[in-house]
Length: 180
Image 1 (tube, rainbow, N blue to C red):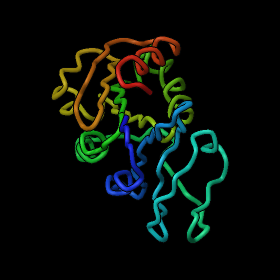
Image 2: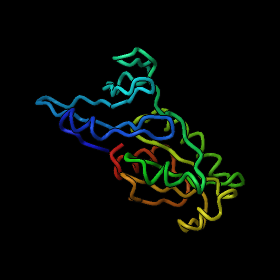
Image 3: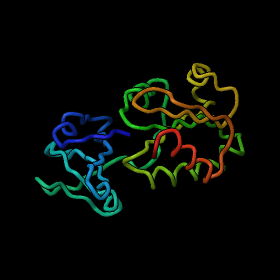
Image 4: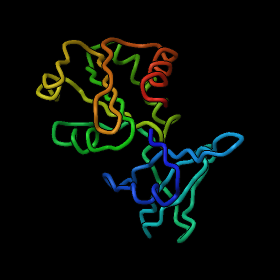
């Protein structure tokens, strides 16, 4: 999570990734609380738009060209070729799920992660790695069992959990480790 104190510094920290804009979580400090917003870059004109978190579920339009703003709200499939771009180069928080189609716990965890990706869109990116198709990538991270969850923040691994978590445990873990 990025805490940016001025609008100017927020604009200088934007990037483009995979056809989507990278969304930075902004907390503007006020005397009586914090206004929570995210920055979304327009794909058409390149304007950076500040959007309140409570409006993320509605249709968003660019303040300059009025085109619809898009941001990643679903989990992404990651391969050995795209891992660096999707996970380590991503400046925000990324949850990487190493899973298998033969693992019952993984199949139970997948819909929970999909719901979490939609709920935390703009704050958390969820990446999924199928260990059956990516054995080299799973061995790189010493994945011995599935599901294995890796948590990245600003391109660095900050925690690892082996085994399935309940939705409440997952949210509590994300809040305690990454603040999302």
